[in-house]
Length: 286
Length: 219
Image 1 (tube, rainbow over the protein chains, first blue to last red):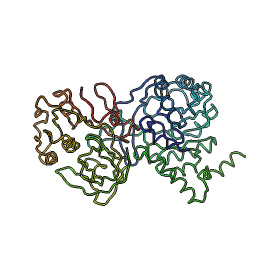
Image 2: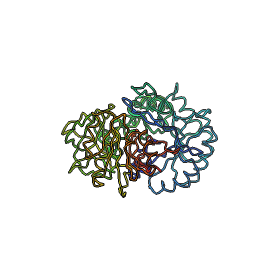
Image 3: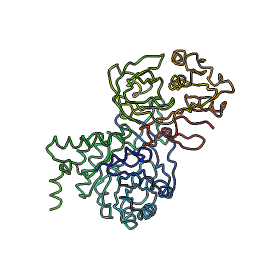
Image 4: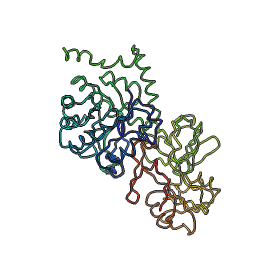
């Protein structure tokens, strides 16, 4: 499947772009409304971009009453990204979403670099969310940890159904004239091509550690980029920063992905799945 | 909105600015004040530019080469191609009785097209230097000032003000013309509501400029 990275598309403003995806992932919803961080919120870097949006969203109440009914009109499967500041927030959000048949899956954003990190561990959050919903749970992890494979294993043990890899990592850009931070809040989350090697390694590591279904994302600009993530162990891929530059990217990347797979002797791109780790996996599972 | 790969017709130097002219292709010019995302060669993100002139079969953008993206755009040569997405956002409301155009610096970019659409209304333009002020030629018969004189000192009473310029200028304009239409500016990654990056705080309210602006009523 081809998805968008959470926070990189507003399906209500650009429904045609969202319909080009296999599922639409919402911007992270929090318990209460948030305006987000003070401007300036984005800055381009040499090989990526920084953002510090700060989880701007209408909060779960308005999301359910005002946005979800309109998102349901899209006709695309909906994944809802949820975020909070303590374990109970995640459990409450999942519980609220559990009754809505239109919600196909829930992504647990436990890794936003632009807000205070929840004090509890990923495993505690996943376990609490697991008790609150029957929906498929995807844990979105940060690669900025000593061993992401261990975090993935903990998420799996706590009941996650899949992993979304990766979230942005913290970065800083200084205005070359003033040598002051280019972003209002100072640092931001790094995305785009600069993140791709980090993300690819996270996918390969977590796939090897858990064998779980993974949505791979981080700097995917072309079908070949997407194929690399699939070969590393991603079942699905998501595009983020690329959508900013090219709203036609979903259709283009699909075409390129099929072509790139065929050029390498695969009938479909799924055949490339975990190519890089077939051997490692067979060792792990025997 | 529509995205197409367009060919460069010419890049013309106007004072310190560059007028980038591209073939129009199937892209509509939209309303004055609306903007387009221009692919900046070699850069990750496109750059937002309001339309400066809707020439026959062409779109023209006035660019100030202040960073790597705008410098790459100004270095484009005739025949080279770039992706253009637009028109985007909300332009000026043209239903005004006594229009007066007010522009500052590169903020004059949307005014030549606005001037044309409104039937050559009066205009006042302010610039940092005489060299910057050469771009005033794009708005015929405009009254022009150079710092230390500020453009807000030239705004007469009784007009419907339509303004574009740096934020301090817009704040000063709305102090003297509370009903003015103001075209704001902010860094944008996408231009179509996806990134939430162009939020600006106006009177304590955060607005996504690409969707709710860039032209906003001052009051």
